[in-house]
Image (cartoon, rainbow over all chains, first blue to last red; front, side, top):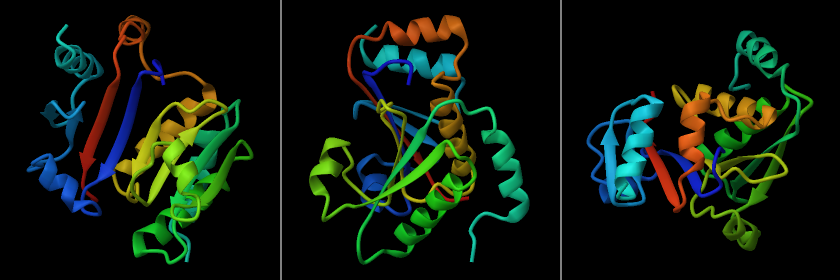
Length: 58
Length: 141
């Protein structure tokens, strides 16, 4: 919402099991960033921002 | 049978009271509804009924494939939480359990047209100049 370049999906994987396989989800919540990076568990907003910046190579 | 309990309905209505702007819950299902599609549609309608500012718009994923594509929706059940602008917030699958409060928060944030982030963090987020797609994988709880 803060930046139109960012889109956020919540995916209930038991209804979309192929995505659980695709992203190798073994624990939840698992957040996938741009198909290339991910992190497990609930993280602070600052940690999420760091993970996004890291995925963009910043 | 309602999915949201009466007691919860009054709590949610209170949570929605400060909402200043219209919120659209754009929900995609299909004519022959899967079990979760039907429940998700019902939940969307029940949530929308709790505020005059919140409206449910139910669409058919098959018959309205162009609209689904326009909104970037590639699976159902899906709910897009929007104002006049599309803030690109999507819930795929039924937002039950821990995800239900996340849906309610999204409705309030969009209704206030204000992201719930502290200012320094917001400034950093606004600096991001490349596309970011966040997918949070969850299970029903």
